[in-house]
Structure formats: structure tokens, C-alpha cells
Length: 484
Image 1 (cartoon, rainbow, N blue to C red):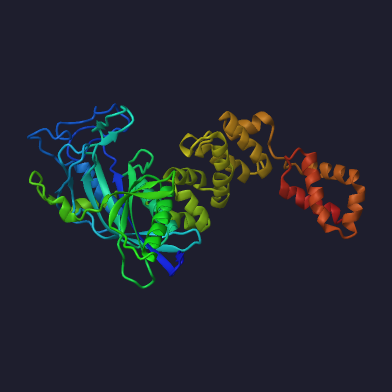
Image 2: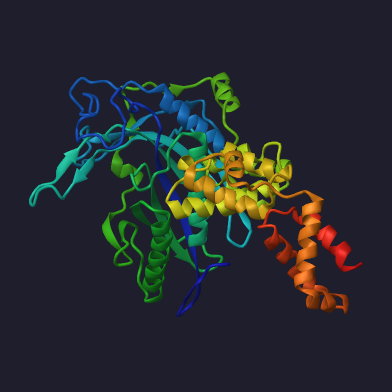
């Protein structure tokens, strides 16, 4: 066990399973034509179906089904050609129907796997139990009136994918890596934007503890955690709470809890319901959902290249290390930017500029890769100027900073500022002669055996030529003159 909690009675292992609710990217809701745009005026995107008016019948949104299938394929999971919608009955103020349409027993996606990478370089496979579709509820707003809560039904009926993991997670870091990888896959697929701040991806965290080799003990569910950092913190504090209870002779109650990030604690929300408490039964208004294998195959053929495959290709095609490839594919926009820069060029040089100078410039200017002041095409053109000897690496730094500041292309900057690299051997020889004359004492020291002074002479020649001399030519000519 790599992560354990040391208690009075010995070591405890944590067991975690995650239920991630991912809002489906679609223009309209799961069973109605109402818009799903985020941030609209409260209750401005509510159809008669969403508001549960009598006699209103749900009609399934084919694109939401396609998005669920795409996600299942991206998770290496089994696609069930026949699935079913059930009614999950419970009363809540933001659930107009008094039930949620969900897929409890017969989900559209079955078992799958996600491979995660940990900070020490190890990889682990986390099992997926299922992915099922369901409607989201509305939203209660508590800060608009001192005595009343307001209901906004804009979110009611929006399509969700609930992605349920196996209880395979054994430490907070693994939970964080799992959520980051899942969000990355969803974004690549375009099936969920993964924006946890807006609530389009949130996690219910199931936590229990046990001694090594024991069967699972009672779990508690921490509801609606909306950041990866909070998920990791919630696991730590809830596991510690449970260990303390068990070690003091108590019993952990199966319940739903809330995580208070400000206090760093979990609190009881309600006793945990079992499936029979929801009185599930097949929705009488919806036929079983039957899809064709040919349709699934067509969706699979049209999937984008996913992160793991892209990482492997970047390594082989551009000759870059595993770590660098992982940094590039973390966000699809960054991977696309890099590939535009690297295509037909030195892949290692491209990755050093993208992850080094470009990332630093974006951080400094508060920009994203999508709003970068230097386009991928422009950065690629600058690498071409380095490759053909027009500028050297030192001058390239100056050119790049100008590109960030002005938005101008590299060739225009080089011409305007007269930054072309000096490759005229006559000019370089003259600079070397000048430096050796000024530093005759250092020349004598070098020739007496102080080879380390060679770097000093290179620096002086570059200074003499204002950094424009071709370093390779300087090195060759300098070595020849000093050793003469």
C-alpha cells in the first residue's frame, strides 16, 4: 500500500469510488427542445416538458445519445445496443416531475477502463462500472431573499452522463489523476466541457477505509464536489474521520455528506438511500432505447485522436520525451498548436519553445493558448529562420519577445531591426582579431593550458558582433586562431 493512514491500531487503507456527473454538450435538453446555454436569465430556458406540465411527453434527443456512445467508446467501454430509462422517484423543490428519468439497471454503456499516470511515473488502470444517461435537476438559489429560496429550472432536463468508477482508487492523488484524465478525454471527444466551476462536471465521492486484506467496510458518499483539489481534500478528511470512529469502537453509518472546504471537514447531509428507496420502475412514456451496431461503428470511425494515442504519436513522430508529450496533450488546443509549429520541423526544438518561452509569455500576459499573441504559424516561421541560419538562438529570444509585444511576424522584425545573423567569415575573423588584440593576456593564459577560457573568447566575439555572429562559425574560427 503506497498511501496509508496510521492509526492507534495500525495501518488503514482507503477505498474510493467516484460517480462523476458530466453535462452533455448539446444545444437542447435530453427530452425537450429547450436551450442548454449557460448563464441565461433564470427560468428563460424551460419547456412545458421540463416544467412537468400535465400530458407533456418526453422525446429523446438523438445527439445526447450519440454523445454518450462517443464517451463510452473513448473510455474503452462496452456499448449496450439496448438500454432502458427508469423513473427514480424522490421529492425535491427543483425537480418538477417528482421523479428523475435515469438509467439505473440498464445503462447505455457498460464496463470500461481509464489509465492514469501518477507523479512518480507509475500508471494504473481504474475500472469503469457504467455510464448512464439521466436528466439534471434545476437549481435552488438561497441568497436572493432573507426568508425564501428561489428556483431556477434552466438546468432541469439537461442531459447528464453519470460515469461510475469501480472502487479501485486507493489514494487522493489517484482520484485527482482519474478526474483530470476523465475530463481530458471528455474535452477531446467534445462530449462535455469539463467546467467544474460552472457545474458541468461534478463528483460524488464514495469513501471507506479498511485494514489490509479486509473486505470493504461501510462507505459514505460526499455529494457534489466541484473541484479536483476539493475531491482530494475531502477524501483525506473523510478517511481520517472514519478511521477515528472505527478505532474508538464505533460504527460508520452509511450516509450522504457534504464537504466544507473552508473548515476542512465533512458534515452529515442525510442518511444514504438504497435503490429500493427510490422506487425505480421503467418509464412508461419511453420505449427501450435500441441502437444499431452500424451507427456505433460510424461514431467510432469519426472519433478524434484521443490523448494517449496522440501522446504516443508525438513521441514517435517528433522524437520528444514521454513527459514533454504528456504536457502537450494535456489540452487539445495546446497539442494542436504544437503540431502546427512542429510539422516538418525539429520536434524537440519546437517543444522547447512551446513549453518554455511561449508558456512563460502566456503566463506573463494572462493569455491562453487560444488567445496567444504569437500564432503557431508565426512561431513555426521563426524556427525556420533559426534552421536556415538567418538568426541564431540568442537573437531568436529577442525576436520572440518582439512578436509577443507587437504581434508582428518574425521576418518583418528581423528586417526592421537588422537582426540577420552574421555569416560573413571576414566579419567574424575581424571580430576575433579585435578581441584577441584587446585580451592578449588572456590569449597567453589560454595557450599556456587554460582551456576553460575558450568560453570567455566566444562571449567576447558575440559581444563584438552584437550577438549576431553565427555561433558555429565563431567556434570554428576562434579555435583555429587560438590554437595556431
